[in-house]
Length: 76
Image (cartoon, rainbow, N blue to C red):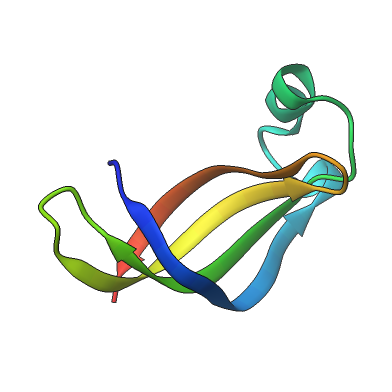
């Protein structure tokens, strides 16, 4: 699903880190070694049909690499 983030991500929480991440091997292979964490937060997104809604977003991030692989888990 393609979408655009509008504004800031709020209520950010860490879900998993290090070996607790199931796809840690793929993240390190594609983006490089780092202290990877799986994160979640709430943001307003614009969907392909131009509607705006609040959604729970999940992504992976590592220091020096940044935020990668965003996905919408639930529209609120």
